[in-house]
Length: 193
Image (cartoon, rainbow, N blue to C red; front, side, top):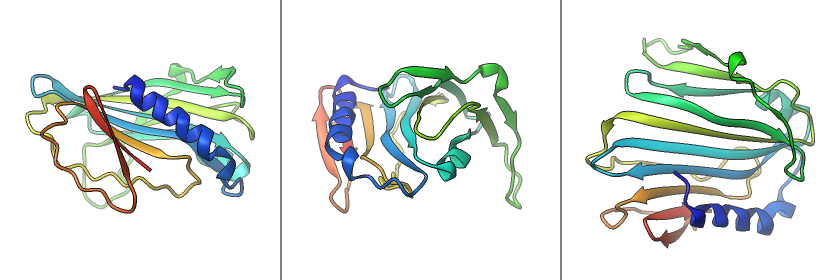
C-alpha cells in the first residue's frame, strides 16, 4: 500500500529537512508513512512505515521494543519488516519473528478484545536507524471510507509525515489544517507536512 509517488515524496522530504532536526529528543523520525487502500470490492488494508534514527539513550529506551495494538476480531496484523541499519542504509540486524509475542494489555478499566504485539529489537544502538513496516488487513469490505482523523505531528523531531489513500480518491471529502499539503497521483492522494 505504498505508491512510487509517495515513496519519492518521503525521500524528498528527508533530503530537504534532515539537517533541521534536533538531536536532543532521543530519536528523530526520518520517514513516517501511513496508507489506506480503499476499494469497495475488497477488504480494507492499511500500512504504516517508519524510519527512526536513535540519537541517545532516551531513544534507545523508547524504541528497543516496538508495540502494535490490534483488534483480532476485526483485523489481521503483519509485521512486514523490523530492520536496523547504519546511517548509510546497510542492514546490521533484523528482528526475529520467534522473539515476537502477543499479550492482552488492558490498562483501561473497560474490558476489550484488543491485543498488543511486542517486537523486541535486541542490539539496537545509538546512531543506528530502525526501519519498520506493519500491515493490517481488515476482515470486512470497505464499502464506505469511514471518517479518518490523522494528526501529522509528533512528539519527536520529524522530517515529515505522510498519509495517503490508494483507490477511489475522487469521492474523497477532506479538510486540512495548519499548512498540510496535498499530492494527487494516478490511483490516489497523499497529505503531508
